[in-house]
Length: 338
Image (cartoon, rainbow, N blue to C red):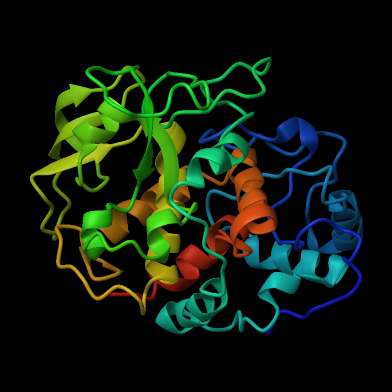
């Protein structure tokens, strides 16, 4: 089906997106497994679809919800949400019957319609996108602190920006999770795309270098929160690099969805390079399998949903479809063989 547009959500902030909803008490922090439905919420069955859908209805500003870690019942629940809200305006026109690269191509066209902020503007953007992160490195009482994906540090905006560094904890940098060398380093739209840029410890960022994310068997360096640099674990039937950077579990799903966005967003844009993990914008099979596995194991979190909404509403006016529709990862990549 093609998702319909609707004026019924005009009072909501940002587009209404389809997800597997859980009650407020069941919202999970970054990277954790979703809690089960609370006892007060009806369980889903075909016989109580209306009651189930009604229990899910929340205003956009009140509900931050977790996505399913696997695609079980996702199609049925998404259909219920479509019927209940009759709105998903950002994705209106996407043919959800498509699979594989055909669906990805429609998403590429959609999410490529985006604003671009400057590289310097990232410092101020991080103050919004990466502060007050649920389950992050800053205590809830610190409303201005900047979250770090590679260390335990809570950074002070402005005074903690790199700069020179000699050790972990000296300063934070602007980390390209898709290494900029993988597209040749040009200062293009990807250079400041917030969907793959995060604050990260400058020393750890440097240690990561341009190594791709993957599972590490023998670490040669470990950050103070558990990220590992070292020998890549083998993947049956695939040629893997000798060295990988393994994020902590808390961010594996987050970073995976960021790189899947990058392949989709820049599928027709990158003309360089053949790296250990990519050919132009196309993920090589070993990396694609790793990212899809992380996506399925570590579901969408409240923090991701919040960051996605902020980037859409305040900065780029595009969205990461794999946060809004985690089921589309399987719908695309389960049908991609090369």
